[in-house]
Image (cartoon, rainbow, N blue to C red; front, top):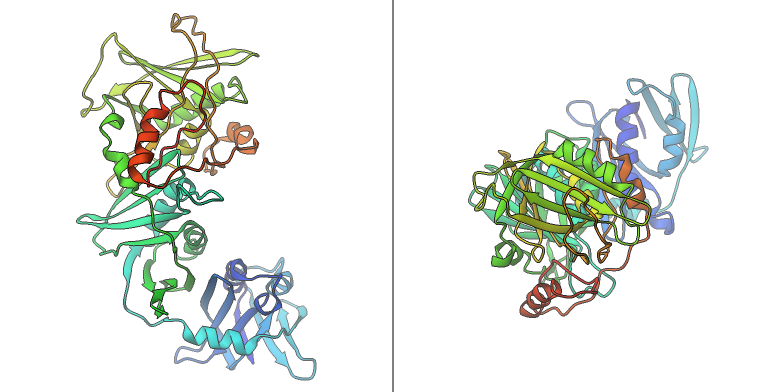
Length: 466
């Protein structure tokens, strides 16, 4: 076995393949390197697997002698450390040393050979790498979907209310993706010419796939269902020109998330447009004043002014923003006040996942959820139903804005974005409660949801329905 390959290509392939290794299990801790000669010179395949997932990366190489070996990925990365991406590294198997010897820009290193070559080789040969079945997704759009929706999928320990997966459904215009963590529901609609197939994909698999897509940002991804085993399809495969990734399928039925978006009591009567960056900046100033045990913000809309306020024992904060009404708003400027109370963590989650500069906020009353959407895009339209919390206060003069502490609602960790949202660090690092366990009958969940708004002390106000 002897081949030469660019350092940058090899480093990327090894680093990404290590996601599907398992150092706790000897048979799954190594990377299988297979060098093959082709009509164009050759290729190097980097294959790894662990229970539940497997990954194959293919990169161009100059192959002088075909062969295969299993080595430690972290050891190979150490040998490449500090080398320029454009440099060539030559790897040769030495039968005398039983090592894979590397030479790069005057640097020399040897890699230990691990067991498991036969098993990894067998599993590699079983991958449907040449399959032409399955749906096709644009990589950039798929990454956008994962960013907007994956954080919203969560399954608690008992698994009674939500599923830690995304529900893909085909539409005449393309496809849509649905997810919920029991407190926030999301629907992402994608317009595309590619035909898709209804399927449920685990959140963990999609988050791993999103990392792989960074290597192929302009590629098309084919999603392939594995062959049935004992009558059940147990694997889903994702193929792009530079990689092939397989993961276990979701074996739990998804909740009926889409019913949330059509609930009459959830439809906003007033819809206003607001600039995302302004809202991020405003929430940043408010974040230092929210009650840590109940990080809630009051949104009060009067006329064309949206007031965000909060109060804690240490101090209060009031922010007034000018907004414009959406063309679809049923009610527009008036002296009537519409108030919604929402966890600052909930709002932060949404702001850190969307990228559109113009957002729509939909308000109905304090008993209905807050709607946040960026449904003004050409390709990806996102809509969030964010469960509100109940305020425990008396109405005050808007100029003095005295806001009492409200009932907290547990949320999950916030994803980071490129924007300066460092003010969210305190929100991310706080201990969080568990998602409550609810009955799995749809009618009962919806009834629980509607009745939950009327409670005066409950902190279990789920969004999801099953």
